[in-house]
Amino acid sequence: MNNQKRKICFVVTSHIHYSRSKLVLEMLRDDERIELQIVIGGSAILPNYGDVEDTLQKDGFNHDAKITMNFEGGSHVAMAKTTGIGVSEFATVFDSLKPDIVVIRGDRHEVISPAIAAAYLNIPIAHIEGGDVTGTIDESVRHAVTKFSHIHFATNEEAARRIVRMGEDPRYVFNVGCPAVEYIARNDFQASHELVNRLGVGDVVDIEKPFLMVMNHPVTTETSRNQENTEILLQAVHDLHIPTIWFWPNVDAGTDSISKAIRIFREKRDPHHMRFHKYLPTGEFIGLLKKTICLVGNSSVGIKECSYLGVPVVNVGSRQNRRMRAENVIDAPFDKEQIQGAIRQQIQNGQYPQSTIYYQDGTSKKIADILSTINLYTQKQFCD
Image (cartoon, rainbow, N blue to C red):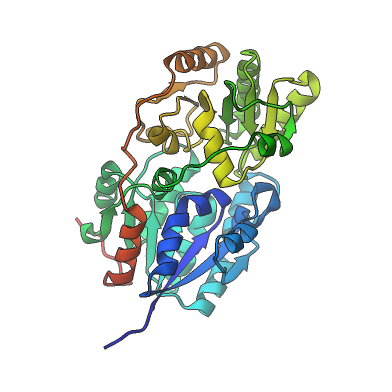
């Protein structure tokens, strides 16, 4: 009888990916059938984006490798080179760790690197959150990772059906729900007024009174418009004169244009009712999200986490095109009047009923159980 533990290597390439996967990691760590390996890289090791190394240690995890792969510059060239360096570095790490399965999550450009490396090393790949549809290059990355992957953990039935239509073996496609939403459901996160206003820059925002949150990231296929669109959004939100907590963009191509628009706006307008954050600890961020009267921007947080929390959302632009959403989301183009009208409508509506379109009980336990017991294979075949 073979009692050898199955070695499962979990890749973490951003702080938000870590927080969204924390319950899965806990289940894998505590499963006696599994030897958990953790590899960190990408923006997860950049201090400006919430260096995940210290957080892992505080949460009782050890990482087995740390990969430096990010090129600075916020450009398409930087993203492409980051991906290329990542393939080389992950190949070296996987060759050393020799995992039985590599687990990756989502659609960011950093995750295609470990997928390519593991595939060429004949290591089975498990992918969390495949099958969704969105805008930008992320959709291409997500579907490419699906085609590299052997085991698929979809967050909803639509996504699971889409994976099967892509030629994946239905026996290896599982609709388990969204680990990020389960993480919220199992914790009562609270935000601290003191911490929120100690970190970041700008005006003090009383989080016990009505406030907006803004999360606006680059659209990598519309880089020529990112700065202009950000200026429109800044003007629309500012002129409502509602206290606002605004988060800086992620590291995708176009991030410098968005950051430039924010800096120029702050210097010229000196907005007295706005505070700007690069990062907040996960618990503080979710606690803040629960309090906001409306989330504005183009983050998937508005689509997934806010659906369960019932937070009103104004989704702006094309970045989340076609992603399944609940009734808490209103879409608006980058137009000042339409953005303001949508925000006013959401504030008037108030809290929405809790939606479970992305939630299932026991998501993380299901993932751990499947990873520890499923029969593994390396040679993929298209299933008609």
